[in-house]
Every structure is written in structure tokens, then in C-alpha cells.
Length: 128
Image 1 (tube, rainbow, N blue to C red):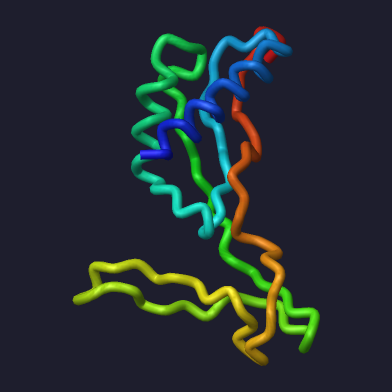
Image 2 (cartoon, one colour; image 1 turned 180 degrees about the vertical axis):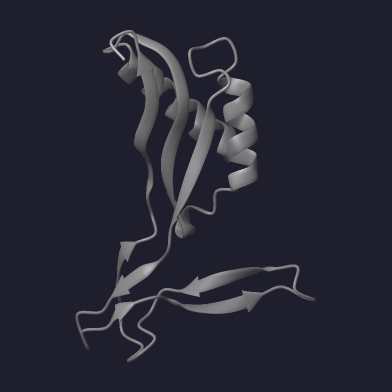
């Protein structure tokens, strides 16, 4: 479950950033998670709840915004979503992106979909 280690790093980074402010309460932490990370959102939320206990983050929500895959092809100029292949039987599998140009089949650059970053924090300070 690599979600726990990713969330541990996020919690550590957020707590370090919060040291700069006179924080009385954290309501929410919003993160952006790309489809290519293959991170499980429910697992991340659970790990956040556990790892935030005993800190100023305890009781806050982890809000996750998805970042969908966007590919760019220098060969034909395509910019858009990846073609997806349904990988699995009876609908229990996962869609797997094809990382080649859906238009011409050429090589692509991943423009979006790899992110895992903190977007913002909803905090209350003594100055509020």
C-alpha cells in the first residue's frame, strides 16, 4: 500500500508549511492526484485520517482533485486524452492508458496526469 507512504510525505510537508503560520485549525487539505499515479483515493483518505491524528491536521478533510491524462504528439499535433483499454474480466479490471498517439500512433509526451501535489489548505489562524 504505497498510498500510506505518499500520504505520510504529504502530511509531513503540510505540517512543515503550517509552522510558518499561527494555525488554530485546519479544515481541509486539497491535493491533486493524476490518473497515472494509480493511487487509491479511499486508501489515501484513510491513511490521512490515521496519520493526521495527534497533529493540527486531526479532524481535517483530505480533498482529492483528479488530474486526467492529457497527451501531446509532436508528430501530428494531437493534444488530448489517451486511448484506454479495458484490462480485466467481467468489468472488475482497470482501464489502462495507451501511451501512444490515438490519432497517428506516434510517440507522445504526457502533459497532464502524473501529478501528486498539495494544491491548497483551508486553515484558521489567530489573526482570523
